[in-house]
Length: 424
Ligand SMILES: [Zn+2]
Image (cartoon, rainbow, N blue to C red):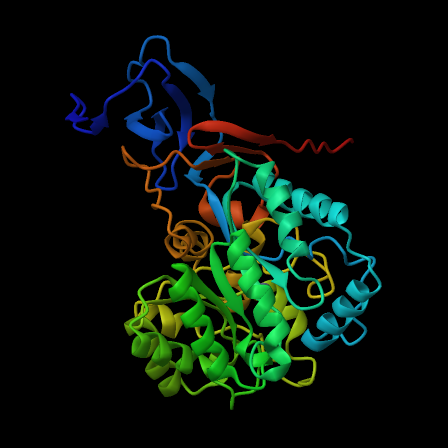
């Protein structure tokens, strides 16, 4: 039920179980009480107005209230293995080779993957994330064993963290040699995943893989999230194939192209032209600055490229661009704190994105990509919120303070604090 209130704000009907998130400031500087009930924001009132009798009060004085953060591209099955799986060359193929060798040694047991995936998800929630999309390896060698483990980890976060899983099919996915990997994808679809994934840039026949993945997603009624053009080689531009094949197929599920590194190596004209096609096909693009800064560019010792897609051209064309971390402390990326504010800082520094836009790209834009309603602090918006002890959006990204409160559907699901004292 929606009724105009005496304050001129719109309110929706309250139940007894109203919680008031009291006294936080918004990025525009207003200090407010945000009322939440039944998982949604029911009112946003100027501080000092009467509070509903019986409401629970969460004092957020000194905190800034933001939409919850979200992670569009994780690999929780690989997370937190940097000390045990080595990448001698530091690049993408070194990471893949290191991972496969460790997998063949039997290093990744079911319990190990459940444990590490759970820890990765926990770190995300503590940082303020209430929704994550993770790719999970499936393939001939491992079957769907990783997927079973990650699904078990996901079950521990019911009501705390929305987790979407992508079946990341091992290469090759096409041809005779791909038969076992295609069979593993079929098994994954049978068990249950949310999206079909794959790596056309690692396959002998990228366009064939893209077409096959579109058909598999169509038959299963799922979305598609492809690792696309994770290379600085400007002659590879399969993002254009993804756009054209999606259009030709009339595919109406959600489509995400992750990485799209080589688009960043094109001339501005080609960037604009491809961005237009990507926008027309309704494809979202997910740059992953941290992992690509680590993996890409080692063969370019002079003026080393940053390994980022053409963020500005894509956004100007109307493409939804959301950013993620990709790998966290594994052979693909030795660093990472599972904090989207770290990604946002890299968007500002390496991607030349303004702080407010960078925050959007790790919060509401991600929600758009993964199919969740955005949070704009309006009545009716989901109460997926992050309270953080920071003076401004720029300050939050710069300092990434630990002092945070995380709300999922209006319920406090994480609280963290830091205590630092100078002793004279
Ligand atoms: Zn990835």
